[in-house]
Length: 135
Ligand SMILES: [Zn+2]
Image: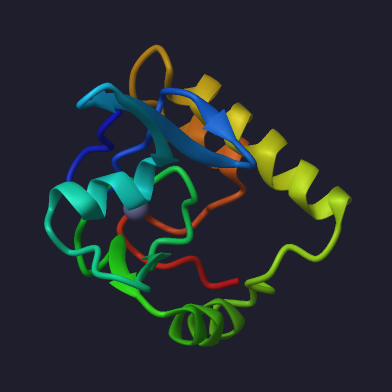
């Protein structure tokens, strides 16, 4: 689901651990990957050891764009997360559950088409889309 303008491209497929998941078969081998990592892979930007960093702070975003999803390193991602007020590392089962529940709510909110109000309520992101949340 593409938000209008410079907004997120919200993954509306399978979700695992709060992130989009995609599975595919190639050469008789099945693979499963996080949707945002797959987006970077297809864009040719996922090098060995790279991780996906959500500059937009939307775990379901698969828009490869400097304002949304970039290939990064674990340490850079952690610094950015801290700068945004995110902890970066999900430290316990409750936080992991919260992220998963939030992602399910976001997917549900945009399943029938883009709805800014429904997205804001489900995601907790009240900043204009395309701008990093302030908190
Ligand atoms: Zn985004």
